[in-house]
Length: 402
Image 1 (tube, rainbow, N blue to C red):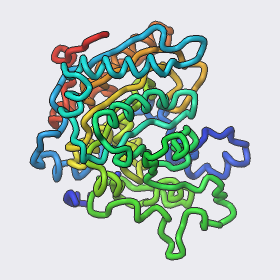
Image 2 (tube, helix red, strand yellow; image 1 turned 45 degrees about the vertical axis):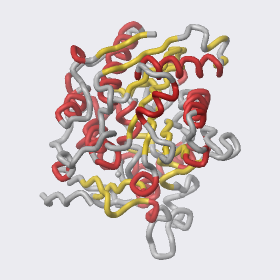
Image 3 (tube, rainbow, N blue to C red; image 1 turned 30 degrees about the vertical axis):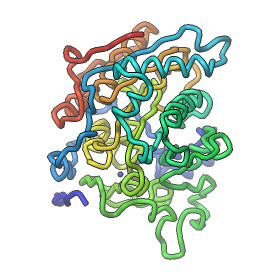
């Protein structure tokens, strides 16, 4: 086993034709088909031995005032409005009111006081939505609008806001465009050649003349999540993941520009687990993630957040539950999507995910979905508590419903 280095990590859910599927068999064998992990099979099988990572190099890094779990550890606010969705249409004003009330309930302060508790007017704030399942289960624009209006209303310049995700095509397809958000930065950590044909041998859509992925320079070689597990060496994997060694560098946007992060995941499952606050950042902030699903899956969600580049900048989590998805995730599946009509807010992503996990399990049971409640589906949250990232013990979590 290699020794761990020190501290220094779409598609449009195409309807694949059989020919296209066969072309990507190599990627599928790694648990990936055009960016969609095969989570169900991974969770049903016994996981392999846990891979060594460089978590020891960062877990005891000096903390700052904004470090997770933030000023309100273990506190989660759930705001429900039965009238926020009417005949399939989301009421933007109702969403804004839900966010404002949730924020004020969370902090015990008004909008300006909440801002001053979490942010400064010279911050560069990155808003991380989940664009998967564009228009169906992706982060609602109305929620992002409410967050931006709060930030700018409290004095943050519009130019100091960046909406970001890992994949450019997914971000744009979900409607996070410069036209939709004038004056706000729209930035992805990487590109992917959606038209790449492994049989053609034409890699110009994602490789530079020197053989490096066109997105290489968007990642920071000095800030790397390292894991002792190998990546597939095929071209389809490199197209999607930028690197195919044991390194998962963080995006330079996060390491060099953003000073604060607001996380806006959606309320949905991934098998018997969830794909919410910790996963939205854990798998969104780094490259070369496909290799990590089998040997580390949920632990990635915890360990990536332990790096100071995330731990010290992630100040607010808003889980968008205007719509929810109780099965078929993490990809979109219309048959399991429903109007949940709730926003969840916390500075503590561990407490937030633990709360939402339990709520989603209850929903799955209500809908008569077979549920595996093995502790492994929440162990990563208890691991997060041991790393000082938040509270995972339900007995120590205060859930305030509005």
